[in-house]
Image 1 (cartoon, rainbow, N blue to C red):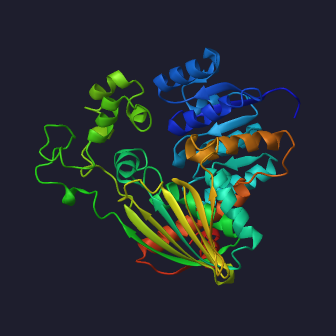
Image 2: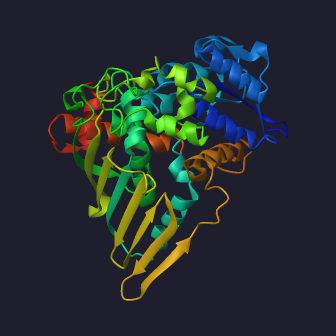
Image 3: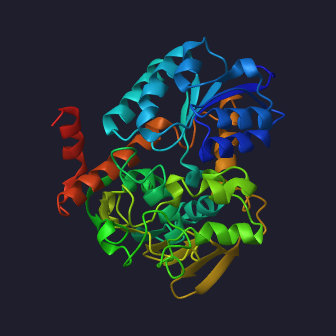
Length: 427
């Protein structure tokens, strides 16, 4: 590309859209935000004001923006999961490169078709699998690839969703219902499946999965619980899933995510929450996604992986943890701990301290920033391919949907090659 700034446009101005726009602003010498679209006028107005988008380049919907001739080099697709396919295909045919929020689609065939059309149109599609870009995981991969741990035999990985995050996003929020968005294992955990495949460099051969929605449902509601959460509810004081979590933050003056998802302006929050979907009782919503799930994976070369996703965690563990076990040593790390602990058998432990990283205070441990930076480098010709291109990312989505199939069938083993064949044959 020329020395001109890379022009970017956004469709979908939720939390992720604003997060990616912030990353773009950190690269403002290379990137210019030129257009935006959302079905909620207040979000468009706020985005336009914050990032200097002129009124004539603000649109009432993604469809309205896509009716126009190509407006930018990159289109950030941050709409809801089930909309990605319908927005990505016409955008690719218009000539946009895409920064596509995960999941690619909630349908594995649609994910494959987006990859096919991207190759046909010779467009780059980078999937926001930000964990591949986090310095923490890049260091872990460097150690694994070095051979220092010997042959990797087993991995245990945990996704500690955190009790209040589950209540906010997956009980009251946009991703609460698989019919409206995606199954939990895809929406929340395609990051984790992608990371496992990337770290090991191996394909999944077969898997099984168990999980359910066991607690955050109506038959587990406290006695006398109201439909809307408030101090008037007899369960309010002792319920860990009450809106008290939000209000305590407001009292401390620590306003940001997730409170600003409910209401962008702090002084309006208490009034907004009274009628907001986020003000509902966490036991009386229309959620159907699981609150805990385990996936057992067999990768190539007999490498076994256990992945555990659970809502019922404090968040003190940092969200994600991993234990990598090899024939010469093992490694432990957590997103919430700057120390990576490596133990070489017979030689003892050494530690890698990443506490001084300048990116740790950015979202997803700096991953959100680096995925945008790498896309810029890609378009400038500094990279041959993206770390998380759509071609590389489709496999993790197939694995997630195979895991969901196994869960729904009571933990039946799913052979990935057979599952892929059945998808293509429409069975």
